[in-house]
Length: 163
Image (cartoon, rainbow, N blue to C red; front, side):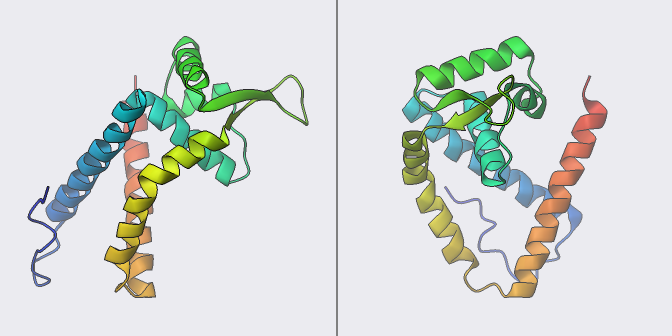
């Protein structure tokens, strides 16, 4: 599906309204893409979010615990347990005792789950790379700054509005 924004004239004024529109469209398209994966693997959207949070934590060398996952996803302990039970039954993750503190549980993804995710999401990553190929380092830094500040603003406002 095209949104009509990918061929916009480079002379178009880049207003706050345009940036909000484009960010919203990216969010909608990303959600649709992730939902396709979830539907094909019987995963709820919350399950996908949980896997993303667990993967990102592992990538940063900071294993995820059930309580940190609950906080990250704003879920109750019982809802988090339900998510983890579904993911464990589906073979996507397992709970492991921490090697440094046996009282703690760490969430780990199975290699098979990583492979399945990579098969689905890598083509999108490759297409993104192609789309960004002509961007210079300064443009990439500006985009990264834009995305980081947009994420921080979203987190801040969400925190203020959360019950």
